[in-house]
Amino acid sequence: MIPLPTLYYFLCYAWNRLPEPAVLQASEATPFHRPLAMLAQVLLHGTRRLLKTGLPRTFQPQEAELTTLRGRVELTPSLHRGLLERGRASCTFDELTTDTPLHRLLAQTLASLTTAADVPPALRRELSQLRRRLPGAAAETTAARPTPATFRELRRQRPGNADAFLLHVCELVWQTALPNPTAQGRGRFVDFHRDEVFMARLFEQFTRNFFRREQRRYRVYAETIAWQAEGQTDDLALLPTMLTDTTLEAPDQKIILDTKYYAAALRTRYDRQRLIAPHLYQLYAYLQNQRPAPEQALEGILLYPTATQDVHLSYTLGGHPVRVVTLNLHQPWPGIAADLLGLVAEKPA
Image (cartoon, rainbow, N blue to C red; front, side, top):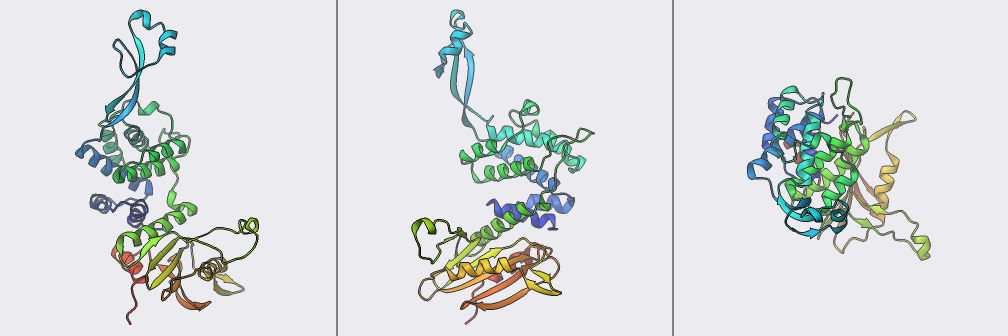
């Protein structure tokens, strides 16, 4: 199980937000035992920062019955309600306000956390007090539960970096919330860092964005590799897509780095430990279908989190160097960062 401070770094890098010292200090002062308490602290700090700097105002569509015309007159509802005879009309218009869908979502998420058994009582009280300072906080308890469409629509609005991070955190909170509260009326949440599919995706995004932020030698991206194959166009279209987790490219070197969030890098088969065959075959296929630039060395790395044992293996496969390594996620963050950078450090001549 990943320590919660490390998990916080994972979330920050995966979602393009550098860790906040205040959150780290709070987690050190009161160690969290569940990921939900950590997410609550992140939302508490992020929302406080929003309120301190001033909530951004945006134009939001409004509809109201008015005695003076404003915006667009909705003729059908005005006639249906008999408003025109009374000197009124139903109008829709844009109004500059801080009561935005994102801020209402924040208020609703904070409200859900104030009933969560996994959140310490003192933190629940702070969340409740903060929720009342947000616009729309009085009505969020009756609002419908957010759906995937809710988050898709908010992402389409292209929020800024800080707002986008809070949106990710809110989405994770609602993804892990079970439909019904407990018998005591408290919300129930699943432990998301036990979800192997989610954690595999998070490990991949964290690793790719870490290298984007923390080194300057390589261009970092996820690469679609074309098969070096011949055949009819319709037949070629049936070949599976080869998409790398992380490609690091410099003029003289290209590294294909595949992350694997598995309990162990080795499996026991017939009383002998061996590498996981599909992982190695996949990386080998990536390397064999590459066409590196002239004078560009090509290398492959399989990266696993350390679980039962450390692994540091080196091979030459198909003419290319390949490494299979583990990353110790239970060490302090500076050690994790140093180990990652060491993976792609330029070798001395």
